[in-house]
Image (cartoon, helix red, strand yellow):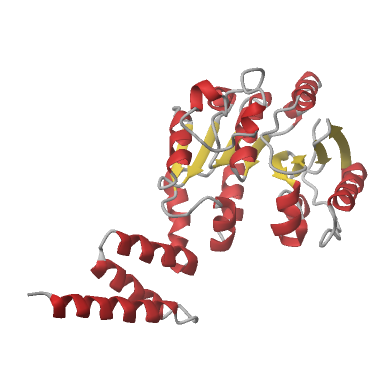
Length: 318
């Protein structure tokens, strides 16, 4: 399969649709531009054929409907504006994509040489279960690049019994094919695993991904919704494009996240973090810096509170 880049003229009307109506619209768009396939009871896949770059995403359909811009899958904008082909794997709700129908789907794509026809393949997962799947199934496209935001390495109890989360999801089989995500990354050319080191269990999972070709990207105080945080900071799109161009690296990523300095949500969390650790002077300096950029008055109020508390402690001192 060889193709020239061509931007797809996709028009969508996906906002405020229920699960079945949204899925039907995705089906129609996919059939018109590529293919659509049900994968068992709880998952489905949609492919848009455009250019020589292939963007493979794993997406929670409920989260996309409720939170994504235009209620669109993340890859649609790249198919529309950049001419990337897009393969999306959807779950009806929270999922780690552990279904035999999905194994068979990727087996068939490999047998047919589907991934071989693209110049570069980028696997992306924007949250734990989706990020796990992006890493795990990337083995189907050797030489691919992977972006995984706070992925779990596995939910297999004997290996990650220290993680008390996702008790219901542990019932799925994580020991069979495409099971242990860090090992599945061995075929990738490059992988990026982003996580917040203050989220202890996420950090423990990230450590399991340590490989020579895997770049760990700690994002201190970014929280559990890295995809939303990156979107809010305006760096998510550039991060993905750099990865597709094979130009993303640790140094470039840390240049991107300097945007946190201008993000009120991050800086509010940072003020709280500093105060929790009694770094009063640093908290005051940060509030003073942010007052010029904040229209809500939060940092002025916080600075006044800090100064008042510091004054009261000084007055009480012997």
